[in-house]
Length: 197
Ligand SMILES: Cc1cc2nc3c(=O)[nH]c(=O)nc-3n(C[C@H](O)[C@H](O)[C@H](O)COP(=O)(O)O)c2cc1C
Image (cartoon, rainbow, N blue to C red; front, side):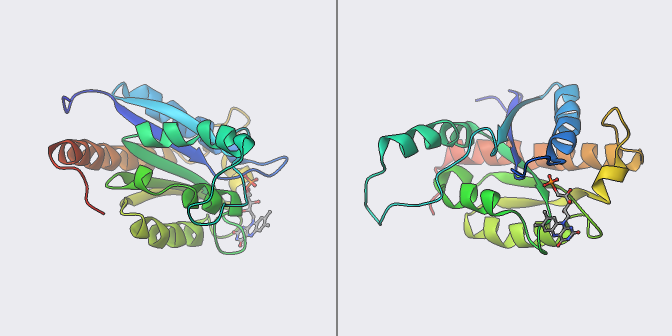
């Protein structure tokens, strides 16, 4: 596969709360992804495509309804070259639905880059992101240094869903540039030599 082929970027929206703010942040990020022209975005919204919360015993079989739920998410993570996680901060961490989605998968994360866009109350979601870095390291993913964070999230965007501070747009582009570098390099590396976990 050419290194010039569009990157497939799965954007995981980790907030599933009724009345959530998350879609505003995710839509803004998707606008940046689409504007590049070298990335194809796939929004994986854990509210509209929820995953089971009870796992089978080791080696146990999944009931058909759980297979169906996973079927709406897992192939999309598998196909992705890279991920951006859009996460709020809940109690100094990231939401349970997001951890559940991460835990249902393993090889889908391997040797792929993960960027973070976070938001929250006072913190801007920074503690959620630091915890996600530790989790993703266990899954052999590479986390991207640059992030975008919004503290006081609801007040940080105007009525058109645009950040009030243009620095956020520059930060998103910098994040995506770093994601692009890692994703293209790792895609070539995975093709040259399957990742050995
Ligand atoms: C259960 C819960 C816990 C929260 N804990 C924190 C927190 O620890 N730090 C923080 O800055 N904001 C915290 N917040 C505020 C949220 O990050 C903020 O309201 C954000 O917009 C929630 O995202 P959502 O609207 O997409 O669900 C919390 C909100 C909820 C619902």
